[in-house]
Image (cartoon, rainbow, N blue to C red; front, side, top):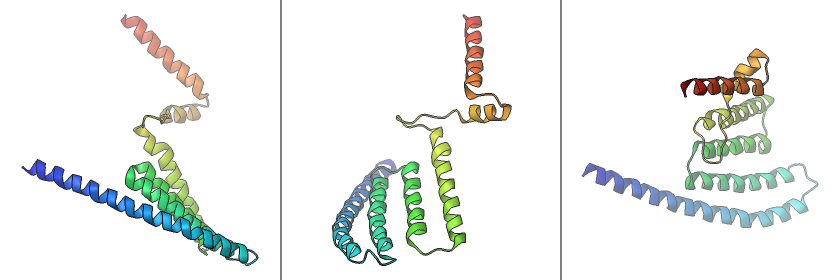
Length: 165
């Protein structure tokens, strides 16, 4: 009985998530339509200092909305990290920030890229290649190229297989 109730609640959550995704699509479409007057306003005031930043802010809002929609439709760690990267980049580019805030933003984006590159690839999707991180680290510490390390590992595996047959 409890399992059936959990399944019903889970399905209800998925339906609500899809409804929210549809609401985000509507918001993105409205934001895209409002980019046309923003572009015209930017063209009129293109010589003013902050005109491009205002237009860029509107464009970033649409891009972040699209990334958020992707995250709602296909939730994954990679999509969440992508949304965070865009949010931090928007904050750093559009807002008036201090050098310390810029430094923290750059470090944050670097950390997010590191997580996206190395931490998320431990469980590969169908289209991702898993880097042999530990082999690369070991090769860089020993000063030998990765191909040499890989060839040594393959030779060791080949000699094991030949001895067992």
